[in-house]
Each structure stands twice: as structure tokens, then as C-alpha cells.
Image 1 (cartoon, rainbow, N blue to C red):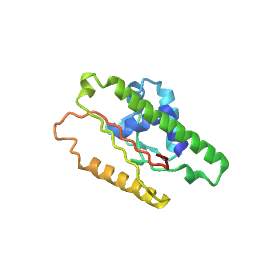
Image 2: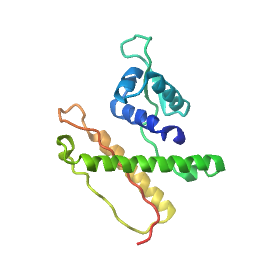
Image 3: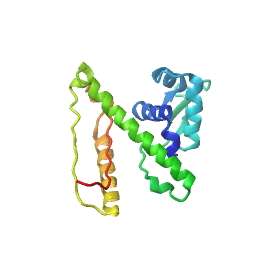
Length: 177
């Protein structure tokens, strides 16, 4: 599953469906500046991994292909794949790709910080250093995820406020001062 999502175009498809919900293949292709055939191929790969699923056409026209996410979030660890050296290698590469994507998004935001759309958003920098056991770190991750899901469900998207997609990411790991 994780290696399927961390392909750059598949990750963009995942994020688009996360933000905009059920979408038609041609809409995805146009929005992601990609070919319909390429989008269809990557959707099938994501479907095999259980990340997306086919959706009913809201207009009842069965000639078009509609898709939605099968799950809203992802939490995983390279250790989840430790049973197989090949899977562990793929998971480490997916992790590296994911971190690169996260940093690239942050860098793009910093480059655009002066444009009118992003000027109103002040990306807060939250960081701390503390002591934790492996179990305590897993607990922290679960609590952060629960807080994010609670926050997401508290937002009324129909309240008339203008919103733009935002990306949140966090990493906690052993470190040295």
C-alpha cells in the first residue's frame, strides 16, 4: 500500500481526492495536468493497494469513470515492513520520497509566501525536544492523528468562509541536542 501511494503522481491523485472528494478521471487529468490514460493506470494501481475505489457516477451515466478514496489517512512505519528485506527496502524508499515531497511542499510555500493567496496564512513552526520511549512516541503519534481528525471534523465547509488547501506534517524521531 505505502509504495503505491508514494509515487509522485499517485500521491497527487490521493491528495486531490482527499480534498475534493469523488472525481471523474477526466477531471483528475485536467486538474493534475496529466493524460487520462496515465491517471487511469495510476488509479488502478491505487485500487489494487486499497487506497481508492470506484464510485457511482453521481449523474447516473455509466460511460465515465469516477473514483473516491477508500481511506482518509495513512499512518505507517518502515518497521511495519521489517518481515521482508525486499518490502523493507521499498518502504524505506517510500519514506524517503515522502519526506522529499513534504520538504518540497514546505519550500514551495516559503517561495510563494508573498503572493496574495498565501500571504494571509502564517504557517506556524511547532517543534520541541523531549524524552520518550518507543511506546510513548507511538502514543504521541496516535494522539496527534486523533487531534487532527477531530480538528478536521470540526470545520464546517459550508459556512461561507474562503479556504485554501493546507498541508500538515510532523515527524518525531530520536535525536541529539
